[in-house]
Length: 302
Image (tube, rainbow, N blue to C red; front, side, top):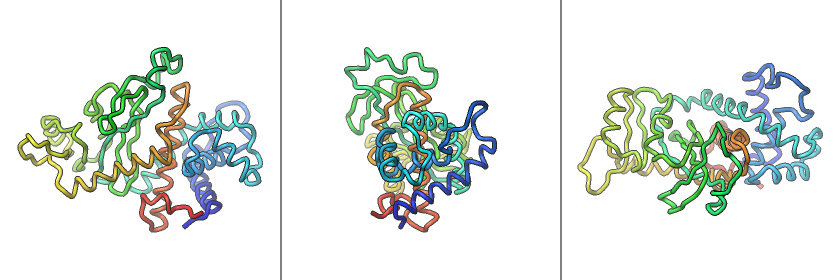
């Protein structure tokens, strides 16, 4: 498929396509523009996330070491990190723009789930100083049943399409049960959509209300002691639902969403949306080249 050089060029071309369309006047109301263009900064971040470099320092050092000639205006790390943080809303808008162009937001079959986002060790949590009083994100203690893991941080509320596009991705407090985020997870879905979820969304009265008020069918696996229902997942839906587990694994293992480090809500959001955008860009490039959308490993050859 792509070699790394061509992949960087492809990502840069995408950022140069969307950024001027979405922000023709740029994002800065005052002050001087940075020497490194926003399109270049976005490209470095997306490619670094795909490569699994994991954190700002590793991405910066990799491009200084291997691609300084391609990005001659790449200055010091703190300037780049600050630029990335200021671009968080741009990353979110480009992600949505790709979803709109691909038609993913109109996909009538989607799946929902949440993934844990630990941010602080359990022992350090009681005496933490970061995120206290933060107006954007509310950290709390959480528990992931599938991994039998207690943690302190957030959880990511995700919705994906049948081909692997992430169409909803919001960091939320881990304390409420997943079912309490159902309205958020189903936001802006078209009437007639069919959504697959896990047993956290098994409430039949809620499903009936969704069908009646929004014409959305929510399917979940049936527990052994429950009578059959029209909202039960069949064998095919259960197999298809593994797609969201695949996407969750990619976000965890390649894009390192469970190892994000930040001290403020907006810097964490910048890192979160950079990872979501990077995943979306990779899926979109696979589709444009007629490849399996979720074959991220084969997108770039050594």
